Length: 210
Length: 210
Image: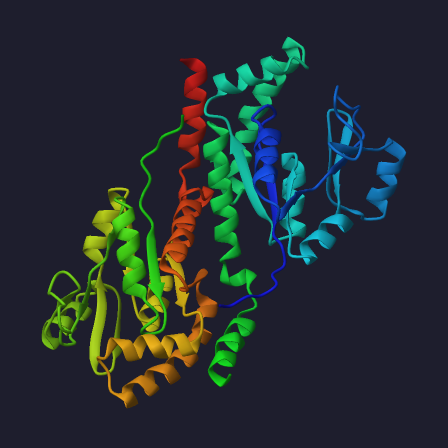
């Protein structure tokens, strides 16, 4: 049996607001111990029940801009007058341990990740329909009717950006969608390009001489 | 729910002789109705229990060379004084129906497929160890001791070629390996590049206007 310590992979999940990225990620994390969530930093105010260091690192605008200058983000973006970004250091540390990282970022951020981290696996999550997306956003009851309309309009524009992603998932049923996400993780771990092929050959030969 | 008729994908399985390509393929075919085996053509003599049109199309050397001239093969190769090749026409017909095709070809052939059919998914099957490969070839009892030694030596050389494949699978336990192969199939079907993204967007919008 060939065993090798592999570097973890970085999974980037994007999709329109309200599509259920958090639900999907929570389910993946509950079912798997070898993947962790990358906590983003943001300057936006916490929603009810959101906690600093759990949902986001809630930073001041000044601190965030300082980290931008220090090149400490894998990606960052400005959205609705707030910054969102992903600190690089904790991700590299986790991947080096052979643990996968999953992150949930805006589309602008995903583009930056694709450029800066070509090995990242980009996944675009879409709703079964725009009607269903509207229902989910309304049920969240955190936005005004105008904000919801703006979000839906933006979602349709954002759908176009899905073309640049590696994979897409339809979030119809979380139990089903999470199995698809796990298949993607398994398949990616079986990619030759993610493997030290010399080690594979050596381990086969080693057996012969043993 | 977004449904679209997708074109099937072509899966190419290679690996050293005796690694168990047939066992793996038989298991995949038994478990799935939406994938078929691409029957190769060859000029080598049938082994015991091999049937024309089932294991291979057993062709004369003259007929095979004529088809080469007609450009009727997706790939072909000469190996141990015999030709092996894959007729294109039946594969295209099957893929157009949305059914996947899996084929088992020599390494030389796989290189040709990668060039001629860039969307093909190339999978390299390796044994858990060279010792185990030797045992399997000996158990097959179809080759002399010298032929076995030649095959093992060639297998180690061939292992190098694994680098050009998309995925690799270790054939330790068929039940386990087939699950990995099925994860690859599912993941590939979720790739954006295999999807008509305009159709995806239209189907979302269509719901909105309904």
